[in-house]
Length: 115
Image 1 (tube, rainbow, N blue to C red):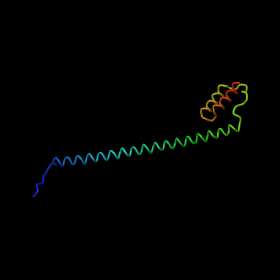
Image 2: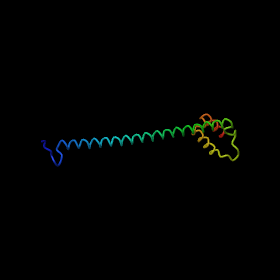
Image 3: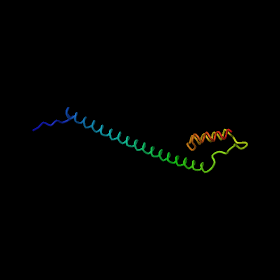
């Protein structure tokens, strides 16, 4: 009849239990880290998608503004009496910065304003 030990587990039983606990903890922490990484990746992809949509909308607006600008004269030939030249230059600079007008168009409009 085999001897059965009653009470605390022996050295091998304790080592086996420790290995199971450590393996479970590693598996759980790996799953949590993987889940967090997938969530972060999904959020990053969503932000990139929204940025691309915003960029497309801005380009469409810029193209529409260019089309409207080509249909109408960009700047009057000479400033009218009482026109704020500084404000007009700032408006032209903001259009250039937004990409609505090119550097050449900006220079030409600035020259007309200042002449």
